[in-house]
Length: 214
Image (cartoon, rainbow, N blue to C red):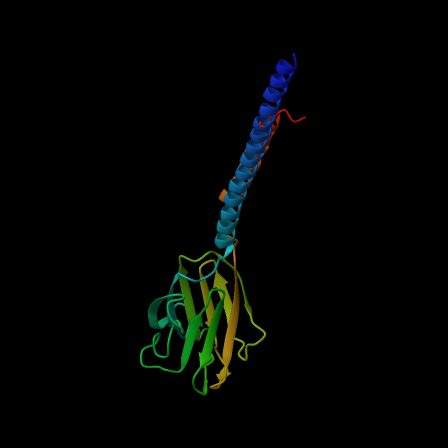
């Protein structure tokens, strides 16, 4: 009898680690699953942040010198890719031999720098037009507070014009335009978040049911 009882106890004792091991493995699997879901969520969040970074960088811009009216081109068009070099349009690149200014375009600014002292003749338009391709839609263009020039600004969804008619400029004159864009649509990350949440909830519920948790 004692031998049987001892054998029975031994059998029970040998099963206990197996049960604990199974539960530990189940929990380990759960943690690994959540780690995978978290990694996917972070990757998608990174894609969302990257897509949200909108601006001129990488787009192509064609510049013209228009005078005495808007649309009457006396220089250009000269094309460049934004972000490849600075300034985007060096002295003389838009209107040939003239080296009186530079225009630099960053991700969200347009910067005009005068290199000489001069006067822009008073006409209906005396300035520059920048036509963009491959950039997000422009929604607003405002004069930055650091500007020392105040050109008349015009814009469409894919172009910006600077009209200096009647303005006097010096070698320190600078016009800085701040540009805003339409937000880039990012439906994939939002959908993926919902998908990951749903899958995670379903998987957790099935795990709890299989493991016998209430």
